[in-house]
Length: 93
Image (cartoon, rainbow, N blue to C red):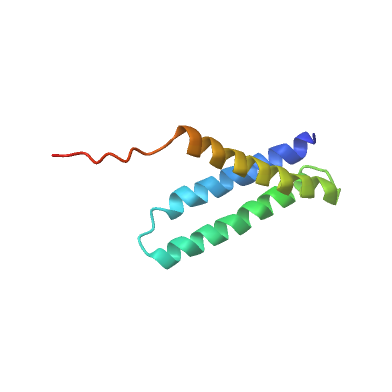
């Protein structure tokens, strides 16, 4: 496992989650979707360019960072769906 690629993938996921959290506060639906698309592109750019900024000049490291980012995102969604379910019971006044 390439640790530099893993660090880059985690940084990309942090950028993506930050953009999603901030994008959900936007009231306009189209601007919210646009912010999510821009966040995905920005996260991929961060994960792909961070290894070269840290001194690794191989393209394979950036490709592994994207692959690790996908695996980590799927793992986060699965864990969130398993353990953090919203209750379906409505509160009564």
